[in-house]
Length: 505
Ligand code: CA
Image (cartoon, rainbow, N blue to C red):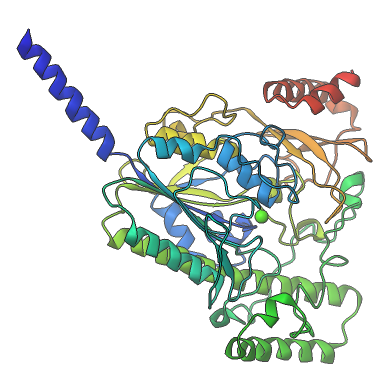
């Protein structure tokens, strides 16, 4: 009996140790406004992204990855809490994240992880759950940015933001306690507006002529909210601030912080662009097309540094014995329009901004080159990482682990997703809306000043140009999708939507 007890005890000790040492490290690269249309792993025709593609090639590419509220700060709040915006309270960018609520990195800490967030966070408060914080002040700057620590102490840096964040990340990895597993969020500012490339990438795409998306000249017919936005390349995108034509280098904040050597190189490039622009005397459609080309050139040049730095980080991980026991994730806080519907920016429940890139590498656990088709959400990211670390996600989290999708144990974790966007009217006049997306259909309800429904068949109309809501053929389908929407709103405790739908019955 004593011998058996001793054996059991020794097994407990061995298993306990095993559990302790086998916990995976996690590096979560979270970028800002990086569109899947600009990533070659997703079949981009616009640019090659060999650094980012490596994660998909050596791991899994998620083909149906979405957000629950397509905007920066709120998306990060959904990530940290695993809850919808109406539950975590961070519905719009101007708000401050309420730190008096649980976030999933606290669960990692309790399980023995050391945790860090380095780079862009932009929650205007610093949530619990991180042992180490070195983040950009607010939105941050591309050149010579200011970082703050946990005590909000500012520290000015010299150089380009994407390089600095990567360097800070590897510095932290160098200095960490290597006896413990770690969770590191590398929050990149790129590719946020106003798309300032690294000096070495200026003009990287100047030889390229980008094709216009097929729905670039959208007339928004039968789509009242799409017609009423303020985010077109034509009218909203600014020649000076966004496209750097005759920028006032002494007044604009991003330029007057450059040192003289940086400014000389930057100015030489954009002065050349401004001169060519003046000589061309563009108007009308020619001007619009020119703006589109310049937008893509700057955006993709900014992404070029991002891609190079992802490669650098992977090189570090692989050359420091961390490759096999580290989960590496690449994701953006939401998608972005690269001229589809004539737009830039995000917010709408249409595909380009509802989707977000997501890929994950974990050698020995995820088969290289895996493609995941199941629909996943940003509120699932936390529960998934906890699950993969052998930690039970807190019951109050609304997302669910999609680990079974990468281990091949399941094809789907949901048959429909729920979405709710709030920020209105500023800055881009996108009316608040909520909706439901299944594999084939999308039902959207705009509310507030607008009171309109939209229905799309994503298979027949992937560009979402034909609102089918008035088509009698779909009346039965709309009824069932609407019921499913009400069920999801109730499940996720979105009382505002539950009440609104109930009042209309
Ligand atoms: Ca964003």
